[in-house]
Length: 293
Image 1 (cartoon, one colour):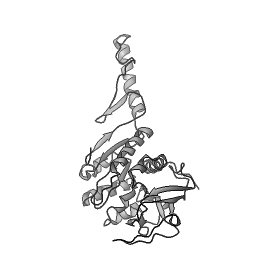
Image 2 (cartoon, helix red, strand yellow; image 1 turned 180 degrees about the vertical axis):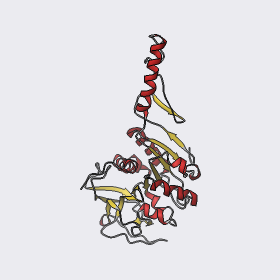
Image 3 (cartoon, one colour; image 1 turned 120 degrees about the vertical axis):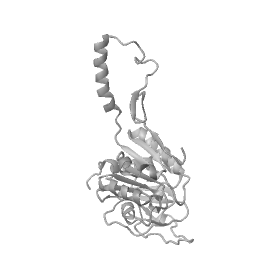
Image 4 (spheres, rainbow, N blue to C red; image 1 turned 30 degrees about the vertical axis):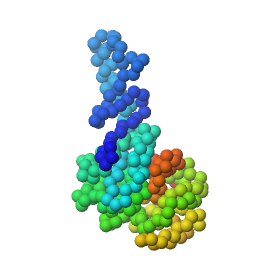
């Protein structure tokens, strides 16, 4: 499904599938679904009526998530690993995932209203036109959630509203290195599996100054644990003693979470990272889970 769209419905409940937005229960070998019904037509109708009321409640997903992967600049080889991780998280945590790189298909009021969170998964460059931007702004203002992964901060520089939503914008990065991550806020969902300090291998983004004054920082990287200097087309010297790599905020009526982690395909197989990513998705979609300090 490269470059296209894919819907994966994965829910708790053995033998349950969905197709085209419809729900149905598939019979399994050894179950009663193919045996002759008993009890007469009245009883069968009563049972069918009860089942019609019961099944949708059992099958309902927690929430729906749009995963958007359009790139107009650098295209990360980890995109498909990121999509696969999202699909597996959907199965594990019982939420629906719809993946597309087609902005025209989903960035309108009718389609965006189907989702509680929109994940900009490794997007780059100018990916939305003016009408699509306006629709996304309305979506956030109506209480929607945004999740930015890695190069989502290398997206839509010319759109001031998006820069504020993302929180910081990418400036440059040194080569991939192992460094020490520090937890700044353990009370946010998805932070439970991080140790106070963690070794992590990543393409450590250096960011421009904050675009929003409402950011709550979750993770920082210790610049003394790696070489942050960059000498190339966009030179950099790091960000000093406080170098954030993940944050969240309430913005313009909605919720926004960002993590700079996720450059390498292997990162999406890391259980700690996956839990971190799911925590951001869960909060962006529901507004739940933040512990008071």
